[in-house]
Amino acid sequence: MIFKDYYRILGLDTIKISEAELKMAFREQAKKYHPDVNVEDRIAEERFKDVNESYRVLSNPTTKRKYDKKWNAYIGKRLAKERGTEEKRDMASDFTKMFFGGSKEDAETIRPQATKKKVAIKGENIATEINIDVEEAFNGKEKKISLRTIEGKMKTFAVKVPAGIRDGEKIRLLGQGKKGEHGGKNGDLFIKINIQNTPKFKLEGYDLVTDLYLSPWEAALGKRVNINTINETVSLYIPPGVQSGEKIRIPQKGYKDGQGGRGSLVAEVKTIVPKKLSSEEKELFERLASISSFKPRT
Image (cartoon, rainbow, N blue to C red; front, side, top):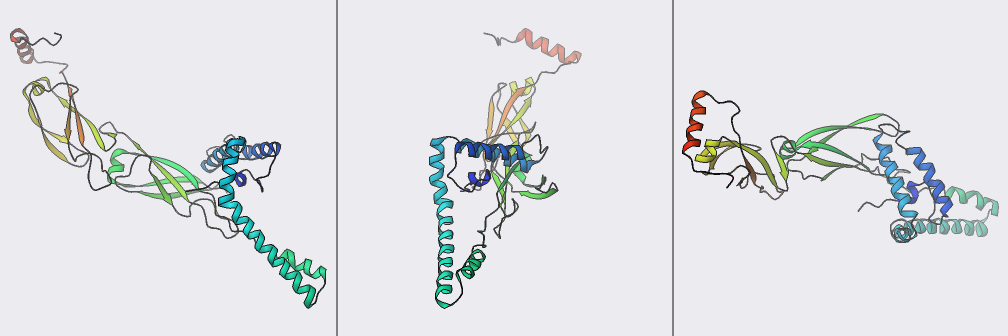
């Protein structure tokens, strides 16, 4: 679980703040990271979202109380422990000076040096997203993304999208987030994958939906046809009298389910009528119309 320090995001050093202090801190950070000031800066855009999220939680007394409990559990106890260690160190220094030589001023001189040690803070995580089509997601692909750093420079990342990744799944690049402070580790980069449908395939869960175009006589008489799946060509039998809009399911020819299996390929029948007929074709259709008892609107 990634815990966000809302107080740190707003530039606050303590959770004991007034409403006026909270508003002032929010205005300063919102102005600093506003999209109008940081045009096409994805990092500033994510930071601006964090600032708004922080203020939304902390400005509501109910959500602030709930958050403060978590903050104390994740951060407050650690800071209190570190402060306690520093205080013991200072007391030991004063005691040594008092009984083994040195003035009170000497002890005061040593104390600031002992408190100079700063807490290592991990850098913030960065979140972004990329779009890939369903065929790229099925087969896997290396994609490149470019993000602007805090210094304003563009940095390019090579992202290996694994075959069979799920829509909305995130890829984590360790240490590629914001830099840590005082020796802390860098944050991570989280990349959300958005799978886009193509004119040929539409992803529905683990199933892939595709169109199967048939002529009127193929639909009426039935036929074995070749149909392209996402990674091969298979033979499919069309039963006589199949209707436009009917769906024929081919098991294990769909998207990867993450457990070694696959969903189904769902072929949706669409009967296509020729726009232009030869004289012979027209004669045959006219003859069919004269002898057929089929009444589609009855």
